[in-house]
Image (cartoon, rainbow, N blue to C red):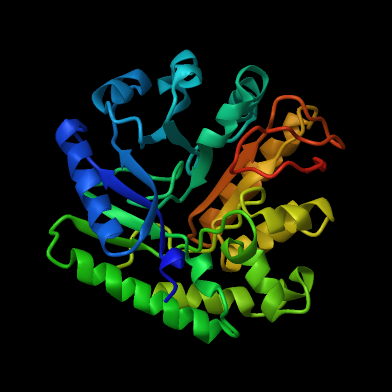
Length: 338
């Protein structure tokens, strides 16, 4: 296995009382992974019942990204959120009557601090203890791990080749942490990023005639069936992430009109986790966003499935204009109407 492809997207410590000891523990766990040949991209800490400034003041190590889990709108101090450097959270709309209120919250961020649209998402039927932000929700103390498993697909000629490499990675992680009583497990979600071997769409196109044709095959179901059934210690979401602008080759499909919200939702219903880093024009009709959230809420309820919606904006681009996110994780695209 190529050592450079053994990538931990995130190791997340869940702590009800975050402090220096918790940060030290997280760094020690990350060091164990690094010594075993893994690349650790991000270290994260998720807690609950804390304010934005409060959690940042408790964790001085600025290399650690911070999560507050699920909040309600009334709990959020937007001034603190806008000035924060590393805080993420989600709004749980599972049981809420969805009207313009939660959407006005999104557009307020778009108008005042658009970069922060990256730091929150709406969630429905949510699953606890996922290490991925902004979806992470504290349930109990411990830690979980999420891979960037797309890299392991390099040089794979079939899904089975890739699955064998995923199995080896799972077993290696289990060996590293088998004596850790607070190891909650592996969120085996497929989390793509950028292009080439890190992109899921790159792998899709290697094994299929095209991305559009792949959508009406069993390709994605085979992946999600495998990661759910063969993960030795599953925790969190364990599904297929379809981050429109983080997977740069998926962003190219979006620009060509091949990754509409309908296609995104279709893939999410059988294999995915929802709408993620999907571009939003500043002149988009808020009522359209309300309709999308209402639909996703009912689909999550009908299928008893965890789904989320994260729309992102640069605060300038209208429908038909190109974005300028100035965010290394988001590919700039010409925004389409949703």
